[in-house]
Image 1: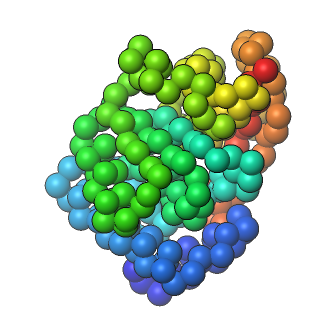
Image 2 (image 1 turned 180 degrees about the horizontal axis):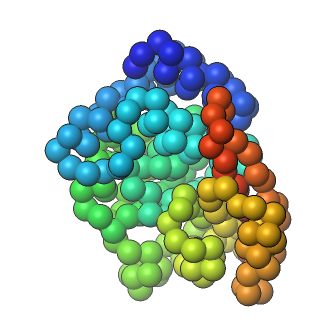
Image 3 (image 1 turned 180 degrees about the vertical axis):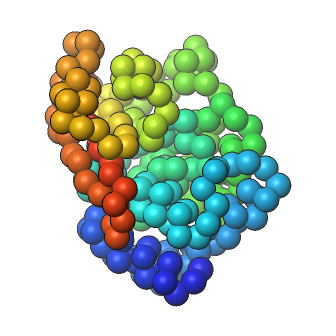
Length: 218
């Protein structure tokens, strides 16, 4: 990892209240290099440069960290190349983490990263969140279900519901939403949730806008 990008990762993480020690920085460096290498053989992500991966994958994933203080178990739906679940697990080792994705090559990559980084208390599932077997196996198991651009918000909340504990949180990570868009998102027709919080921000050292919406299961 180039020095400039290493600094971007360390200083960017600080904006989300995360202090990265040298060991964790080296783990992110390994993750970065493996993602670039695997991407040469198979299309895991359209984001390919060091800076873009750090900014749009690593730091974007870590932006959810401030909302995990009461979370001990997390389900990442449509986790792709491991985002946001693996970076969140890296900075919060006690977090029991489950990733699910329907694309085999992406799950294979997740398992490779988990194994090579020696992460414990994290599992990956190759499957669809709608599958009856998946629902039966993990029903009511998680404090928080998270997704980063997996689907429209209404679908995400419907799909998340069976997996959440009572008063669990569904956390949707979105791009920029104008005020009208935020209002429309908050008025979704899903009476089994209440909107707990909406946070709009820019990714560190960039003009990239993001929105996080947190819904509590009622």
